[in-house]
Image (cartoon, rainbow over all chains, first blue to last red; front, top):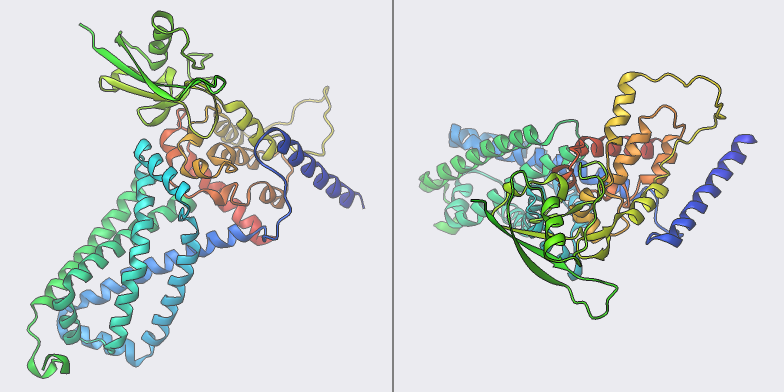
Length: 244
Length: 241
């Protein structure tokens, strides 16, 4: 009884304080339909979808770079993922995770003109590294949404994956993949850095260093794999109908 | 031969209808160990008595003289002119109410923050003035003291992109304040009570992690780690209950 009385009193006291603050500054007390935990859930979804996508992107580049071990290894891996239905589970899963990531992380994008003006002016004035990193996260994120959708569509349209088809794609659209690789790995590298900064136990500078090293390695693998694919002479019998 | 410095200073008196915001330039000779604070006083004494700016302690304790110096929020008394090129631009802190020229009212903002975060020990214990004080672990005391070092200058708020967009955001100063009470064993608030205070966009989840607070805190508070600590605690509180 006493504890419930106390908590009612506590609530009233808190309410009172909010009403007082309304009088003397800009905040106000209001009744909303919003779930009080909404922001918590958004932030957790942003964190876990982000980590999943970074894990996916890095694994993706390691898989692509198996081409460096020879086209046979690449083809066996691609066929293996296909045979065991891993692609059929993995691809829809990643698409759903990516959409959830766009919705949760994208809520931070300043969409109003006034906010845009404030952000740009503020970033130029402050010259804060992490503020600029975030601005580029937004720009790369929006670009990846568009380019990534094209990439997924093209790959699925020419399913399944093998070295010959990949080579055709790389030769014809190397500039597209170069842009997507740079944007994707930039976004993943700084994305994981930013999540660790927001949630983690480690200071920023060593964290940033580790993320940059990993991103450089992954980019190196990506460049090497792309170069290999572009210089590989596809045997005639493996050429797709499109090129015959 | 000392360097000649040019100060480009924001001038505007919001209480004077005929005043328009503008930048005004002043030149003066640099002296040894000159701080922005010393320079401003010299300008006011020798060139322009109408120049408005705040200061009290001159020793980075009171937090009154925070302003935007060449784009970054800093304390005028702690910033040496020798660290800059010949031209130094001074602007008032954004977010806070402008009093005039470089003077802003941080007091109202910080009072609101203190009330909003309920910055006092919540306890059911009756205070007994005769009894001996409860002992506290040295480590706990140091932990509390680390966040208590905040001088409420407002540099973290002025540098924060989120606080610049959304005025209800409590910023690093507010989140750090809640963290201070979280580690204090005398405060009997439950996790859920803390969640109510700061488990929203106005508090822990409003932070986008741009770390301008951590970069620009004149007291060198470990704001990155403190913000992450509060975010984890608040998340666990929100998930548990």
